[in-house]
Image (cartoon, rainbow, N blue to C red; front, top):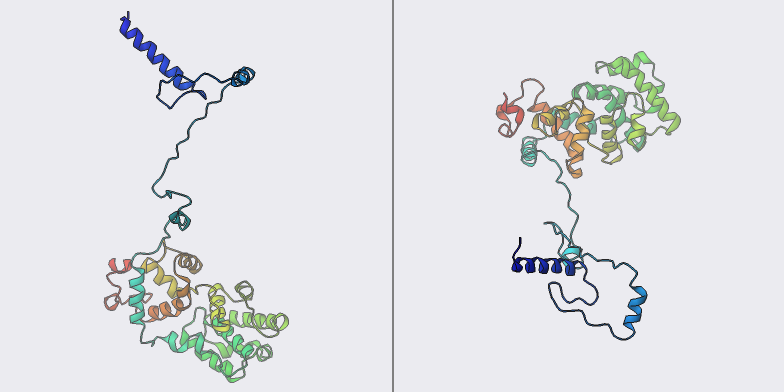
Length: 314
């Protein structure tokens, strides 16, 4: 049994709960035991008419603040705040690696610097003819060293390299002119087909977009992006050949090891600043021709030997 004092305390406790849960318009501040003021004349009548309605309790909602939430939506700090974004992935030490490659390539004495696509067309030819020669040199360059491509372009230009002249040249003669480029027989067929399409649909010029370029026989994504850059002066994407593909994977410039150049291009474009897309092909191609060779890379003379994951395993 409870003592009278305990019973009194329990009664008070019940009363406190009851009063706190049913605070009406006449109740004082929370936690106060002041009695509600008696209703004035006229208020009683209104209460009599409304006392059948249940009283809705309004709950005070407390806003939970988190660390990145602005303190006041109307404050200057809140107005200038930007939504948080997850940090983008980028390779470790890539800026230092790139700086080292620029130093090693500062002499610009690799084959690509003297015999690349920028040096294979006739600069004195009309713009439309120059653009066609750029595209043709890119088609010849697939699976072919720059020295061999440059020689084939010189022989073709000596006969007057235009869409019309190629279409008027028989296949055997064209094959003899471009030999020994890689897959020269297949390239003869592709060059003839592409030249006919350009004459019929583009007035002898080349397309102005990557989708149209890759639709041409014998033209892949790398060629299309280089053609956009050299022929039209537009950086549409990163041109990835075997050199860029190999070096990007060796340096750890992809989240995972990619299997094909197009996978490497997509991986590089996710993080590499766009302002670097135009130079990265020639920079890495020359680096691959002189230092980061496919077989027996010259890691001992490379400035990135302590930063390159591939070099650590050699």
